[in-house]
Image 1 (cartoon, rainbow, N blue to C red):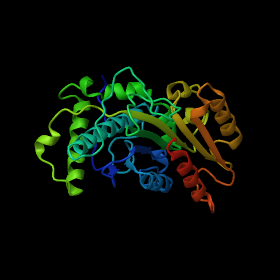
Image 2: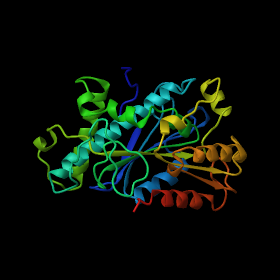
Image 3: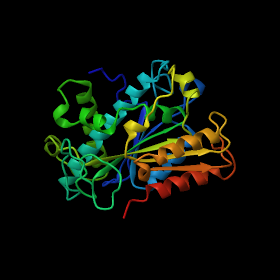
Image 4: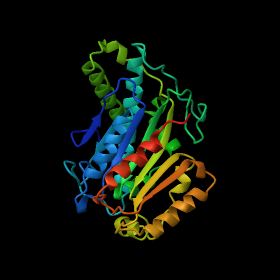
Length: 311
């Protein structure tokens, strides 16, 4: 298994305001050589919505961006591994947070069952190990180049299996990420005035039920995606994304990919068998950077509507 090059460090930020969060949102930034970092103002807009909706938010700098070392790759494959590392940390953080809360009358620690995809009542899109309405949601989100990286990620099933407790080998990169997640989850609980004893975090927790969804803000399509990643042809991310809830939101004045092409792509996604899970929103007056008057509010409102839990 390749060694994930990115570990949780000062170049990443996890924001938690809740003892019993709905889930975690991981947000990836635009292209680093053009100034993209985790402090991007569009990501700040998305972060605000997730926090107000009960999510933990995880942001990070790809290699070559902000305070991260290294350089941007030519294929985006390395950035995909950076993102995968953040997914691993996020799964671990939720796992240890839920285990901690269980000892204090928090959410029941329902276990992940490999190979099963049970869904709670009212859920129409796929999930893995969803055992109750108190299962966690992981949102894989990105803006611009970050959305491109999200579309190249392995399938949710592959991501989840890689970081399952029984699949982690002691001393492996996955184990190191899990250890960092355990420490930070314990630190958060302590800072939230919960009195934990060390042994309450030492037991092996089961992995909570997890549902995945996708947020694509101003996604980049081929041929621009090919220019940034040296992909000679357009890749098809829709098969991997499958029947997981997805929101694509983009502007009608996007200078990188025309609204006509973005709408054509979005309509194709809607026409697939998983069309109930795919939603797109075109904000006619918005450009790629969402700086036009009034468009930031429309971006956030589209996200709030999408995040309303199923009844």
